[in-house]
Length: 194
Image 1 (cartoon, rainbow, N blue to C red):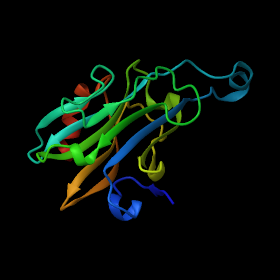
Image 2 (image 1 turned 180 degrees about the vertical axis):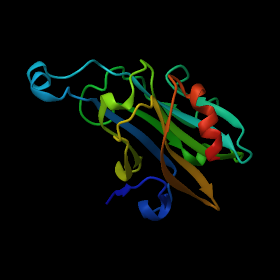
Image 3 (image 1 turned 90 degrees about the vertical axis):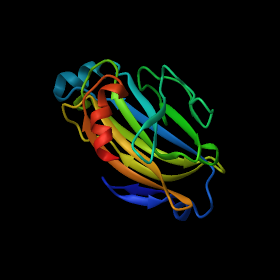
């Protein structure tokens, strides 16, 4: 049964999955917020919003080793793969996914940070039903889910991080509001977390 995480909550991935993990997928989903009031109900949904998921790979010194996002869909070693850019949030389920082969990550990798940002510049007050979730690829079971729909004037969020803890991996829900159209704009906020 998946764990619904609260901001800053940490879980052991192996304990939550009930087994040793080697491949996980971070899924991101969102919908465009519907306009409020009578006219909103009459006119229907708002404009499309292009949210982008990114995975940033850091060593134990907080040095950025690699990044995976819509302009680079795979890490240099192939251990992290983005499945593609969804520019609208339309449809059910995950709108973007990033697959991580934990067993193939270099030994120097300490943390993988997952971010989301609004490439088109709309803030999160225009987004609803946003979430990130972690899936065990062996069988497809959802391990954990974190609700990202908090509204606000920010254009990005540091969603979560997966990090080494001894011989295993933990996940921490972060939900840190940030500003920027790409992960590069958010790096100062991300570095404060490491």
